[in-house]
Image (cartoon, rainbow over all chains, first blue to last red; front, side, top):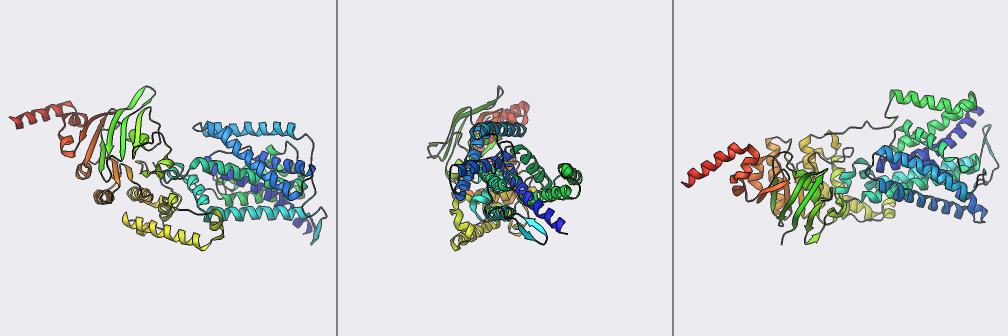
Length: 290
Length: 266
């Protein structure tokens, strides 16, 4: 029982990061139909920038803020310099551009930062809490809290604010959104900035637990993408469920079977789900009237 | 002064001139129709005026200002709105939300006030909602307000698109085949609706295949064939024009019509 609790906690922690990644995929996909494979690099940047800002002597709060703002700026640049100029190109080309951007960001990170593995202490220290026989890192609670805060804030943003509703309208029908006066290019830029900021937050929260280095982005991007597909690409709620499910599946496999099989089992389950429900768990069936 | 002035616009797709050197003007509150056989370039002309395509030649003037190639959302700010032949509706939203989305430009609010649900922001949403409901009533969709847009019939969606465009309070409204796919009763409703909109001062530029509708409501008609303007004038003049008859019915009919005209003269 204590084991199960232990696995669940670590699963939910990793799952929360996957959910944030999947959310990043979802936001950009909704605004532009692009699957942004550079999403993992935002997570890497969030961690690495925080590492180096801390090393420069800044307090954690300020370092985190700098990491989020800089990464959001890089997200905006990615859209302005790589995606927007290729507007009108087929979506597949845009997706390949994001893969190129991912490799480029990794290369630059190697030069600007270094090739070492880094970590910094958790926000509330590294002394584990004991609860019903399970050991919980306080940082796990911060990750879960951070993810919850992001999802609640975004939900409010999308349901209540004019800008948030403009994002939803653009996702629903870009031409119709332009017709009612929504600047859809601005919405795309906003979506890239927002996704990058969310990725950075995930990265700086998880670094004390999983460590970071210049090359953590691509495996994370694949996991985040898988989580988004599992939940149904395009649905923020699906991103949350897909991420948590994937994290918990991995943790249970690692705990009860073998950590060598954790990726395999997770992906087998995803393939199984997508066989039966190609739209993912909460995806909408795409219908277009002619 | 004319509200919309189209000056010699043209566009070519891979060497084929889809629209060539077309000029005409629309005055405030006027209903102008663009007609022509299938493939005459009517929708292409619309797409150039509304910023979807960048014209290869010529200018589009709105209120004396050059708006050629301006993005659709900029044109919306300047009072030009349109509907599409093949519908551009927020399918996954409710009918009411579609109409509310049309108010986007008129709503001013801060993100923070909205997030906190401050009274001012709630009041604004209520006002938008009331206005949207009023527009839905005007196009006869009150009963469908809370249904998802994708559940509506084609004719109803046509009217929803008009309601959403009207929410922008445009000075000129471009309607691309508003009566296509509508039954006789619905066509009559659209006919009445267009006349009302024009009477309220909004200019209408119309592409329509229903000739009875066009002849009944238009003040001015522009006829295109193979991308070129072949005739222009009031309905009575255009319907007698031999070039127009030839374009629609073939040259024999035009010849017959000429003979008829000669008989009448003689």
